[in-house]
Amino acid sequence: MHMHKFEKIWLIFGIGALLVFLTVLGVSAFYLGNQPPSCLATINPEKVDTTAPFNEPGLKKVEGKDWDYELVYVAQAFAYTPGDIEVPLGAKVKVIATTKDVIHGFEVAGTNINMMLEPGYISEFVTTFDKAGEYLILCNEYCGSGHHMMASKIKVVK
Amino acid sequence: MAKTELNRKTKTEIEDSSSLKGTLASVFLLGFFLIVTWVSVYFLFLNRF
Image 1 (cartoon, rainbow over the protein chains, first blue to last red):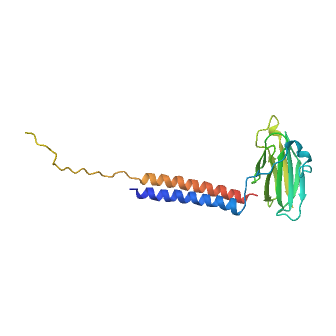
Image 2: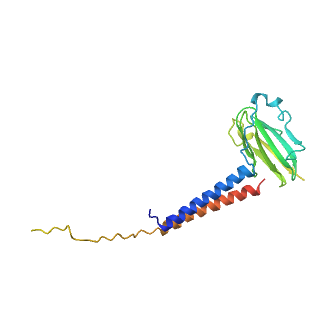
């Protein structure tokens, strides 16, 4: 088959770029263990208030885990529990969240924490809060008439 | 009598005058645009917590 020299060049370039992107994705998923925020963990949405850890929302120090703190959130129309919270600078935190009613969003603006909270599922994200400041938590999934009022705050303090 | 032209040999030259230079340039422009945007979003991801 005759193929123009230029065609060979851009085919190699395209396939090479695809391989690089897929390798990065594969290393991230299978070596670094990155997974979607909601990954196979389920909960009865009607019993959120009595199910650990959601019976005590807030920041908790934990021992013997890969992270130092667990930050538990319960979302419902149209608020997050807890409201404002302070996290020590440099803390490795597992954010654990779920919703009691409809689908909510959980976006900490300006960070990589951006999850969808679905009734019946637990969403988790592990990160190190290494930049001080005030971060706004926003609902970015339309959840009803009070959607735009649904917000909370994380303060990362020294 | 008319002469048959069956035996007349004509040579048709097919010249490939199509140039792919412009195509190559646009393919690489698009390629580098994709790579630059991908890498910048990736570093944005790495720099945030």
